[in-house]
Image (cartoon, helix red, strand yellow):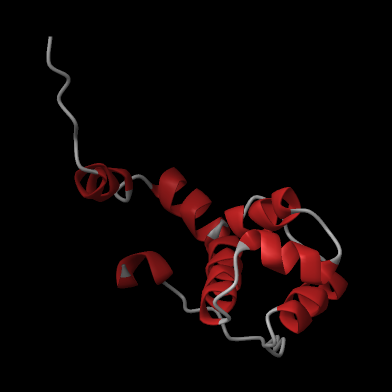
Length: 104
């Protein structure tokens, strides 16, 4: 029996019509943005997770968890990550848009 796969884009179109899904998705936006920024910084530094871990004095598994977006690191950890990737940590605040879901 063949399994039919549904493209994630199709599922996402359906899910984003559900207000509960949109609220949960938006709540995770900052975590995804942070994880994405960390992955980009490491890639731009042309480093592996193991190399960043060594520069930070930790393990590759810790870096994988940080980049997964499932944990929110402390500012101290972010500073160590920045130093390891030869980048500078910048934190800023931005006004919330009233209707982010409509913008998607």
